[in-house]
Image (cartoon, rainbow, N blue to C red; front, side, top):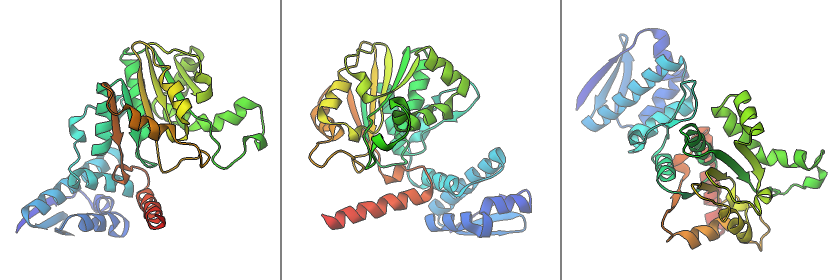
Amino acid sequence: MIEATIPVGSADELVMLLGASDQHLRRIRDSVPARISARDGKIHIRGDEQAVLQATEIIEKIKGAVVRDGSLSPEQVSQIIGQVTGGSTNGRIAPVDVRQTGRIIRPRTAGQAEFVEAIRNHDLVFCSGPAGTGKTFLAVATAIESLKQKQIGKIVLVRPAVEAGENLGFLPGDMQAKINPYLRPLLDALREMMDYEQVKRYMADDVIEVVPLAYMRGRTLNNAFIVMDEAQNTTVPQMKMFLTRMGLNSRVVVSGDPSQIDLPPHAKSGLIDAIGRLRHIEGFSHVVLTRDDIVRHRLVQEIVLAYEEGSRKKR
């Protein structure tokens, strides 16, 4: 048994470190088998060496986040715990450089780190995984990084306009207004990383293009970074059409969630078909993310697990 102590500056800082009603502390205790208590302006950690080292690292990271951000969410605590206890390799991956405001985007899980590394080392990358694993966000971030570093001259963000049980004909507006909701997630990801005016300027200059998949037919895209989102909703002919748009000095990233296919029952998903067809091609990489890579609200992991278990029972 060994013991470690971490000094705390004030009572307010202690509350932020441990969380309201000690919710952060309980989460740490559930993840690391160490005794953790607070007294005399210090946090005391006691247990075997590995547990004490992990608990100390978690609390130090939480303390640093509180100092840096002034507050801490349960989701941030979960991410820190996962980084320390889950054997994440993302520390070896260089951050994604997307903007001049000083914001750094880092992969938060080992799976996300593998995804970013694959994009940097392959011209064609497929990423499959559940909602909330950062597939779209990281793909758009690496596209912006490539544009900023002048590795490519244009970004094309693509989505299939497949109705998830709704009917486009009943939506108000012209065709562009009907299609815009399908493209919104891609636009949201862009605006997370770039100023609104810069996005508008790039789109006006045709440096960034956000288009439905149907608009890709007949084109050849050279010197471009092409991202297809929600690829599970492509048919096999659509996927073939999309992939053959790839021109000289271009890179393609395709992402999707095979558990959320909105195609008619008889239609085979182009995402699933392509992963099988392309797996032996040189320059192709397929990264699989799991619920352990989910970085949204902590309940999303449990929601995904609940649906996975339901599907297994049906089978």
